[in-house]
Image (cartoon, rainbow, N blue to C red; front, top):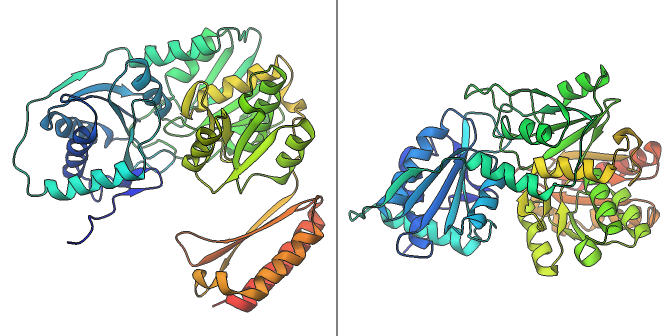
Length: 442
């Protein structure tokens, strides 16, 4: 018997809505997820972002849950971390998020969260895939329920307000870019409740303008507005609100590495950095590692992906970690990236200081080159490449680093170099790229 088709990727089931991710598939996923959830009549929270396909997929997912005898609770438009928070807050059996995060509106996705607020694991995903495959011939169904969960946005806001009860933003002027996505109501509201003067852009979703030239993946417009003056800090969220980037009053972008550094040093000084450690990925700037070493903070490095960061945090019983993209996790609040909470934590750490005067770390110049190759898997056996990597790494020891790795999806080898100055960074990169092209080029 052949294995069931793989549906789950690195962040749930994702694809073009109405094509790969059809209403039929959403119904099957809902039914399968309800079957693996604890209890005979599992209560499953469903939230979504603002894509035009969201309501269709929400309805199909809810129908599948009900057909398996579950109770689907429709929370409406809410950031992804809201689902992770509320599934724990209300002691529900499962949560589902209908979103494709920072992707264009045509895409959509479905991901599931356990009762403890963590994403379902590989074994659970495989079981859902098996049940979806088996459901193609299933005819039996139960009678569950579908009902609205009124006030889910208000519940999420109360959780944020409780966490940041001591944060007074009176006198602070903040510009928010909500990506025409899931944060468009709750983000401006929580900043106002905490006393800030708030102006928000990209807060008029029409189903198709989510992430369209706005948000954390298109931060240029926010940076331009910040340079024009009038604001102390700016924050750009992505479509589902699980990541954020900041911009200072001069228009300089503050990426996830710097945000983690700011948060880590603040929490450690307050005695709230559990385990005195942070987890980051292999893409994190070497300047971060230098800053943490100087501060006595242990750093664990994982492969790229928030699920790897979270797994490391849980394994070590640490609380703080994240990625350069602005996906920060503070398990003391929620075991998921939360862009709004990260923005508020940043302001809490600054304690009234200017974001433009941040000094948590010094970013080293970084250069990343994608080299097209005939076979990315041949990198493992390319001894000349690894000899060159070792040679360059030794030359940068204690001052920078080298990372060479194959792309997971394309015929590319990624060469990344970080060095104390731009000239040395470029020279080392050029030498490594030339070696990769010579040994593996097409």
